[in-house]
Amino acid sequence: MHARDALVVVRVVHTIVWAFLASCILLIPVLAVAGRLRFALVLTAIVVCEVAVLAVNRMRCPLTDVAAMYTDERGDNFDIYLPRWLARNNKRVFGTLFLAGEAVLVWCWLG
Image (cartoon, rainbow, N blue to C red; front, side, top):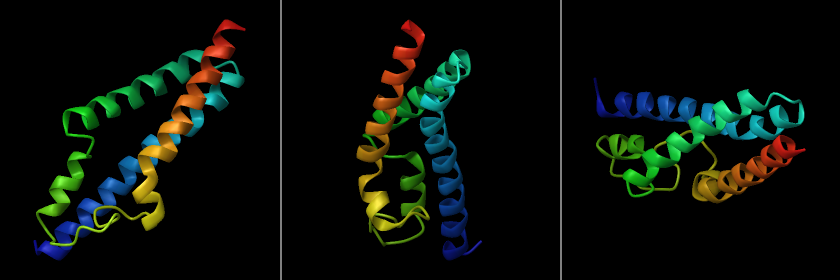
């Protein structure tokens, strides 16, 4: 497989994984408000596992390192099909949304 094709595969996989995790984060408060607290907790556990993977990998997705093997490009979104501004601010945006969603989950759990 050519490097260009391998990079496309890595970017597609990375984008799919990102979309799944972003969906988990967005669904947590929705599920909490709907009373589906256990499902919200499962999604929380999935996101916490991803945070642990990032922490072990110096706050970088391991797929970024894989993508780096196939290109010299190092722009904010060289490894994923996201707009540059979102790739650059991904942890800040989704970290904030995750914490807000967790606050909603705790509020619903205690309420």
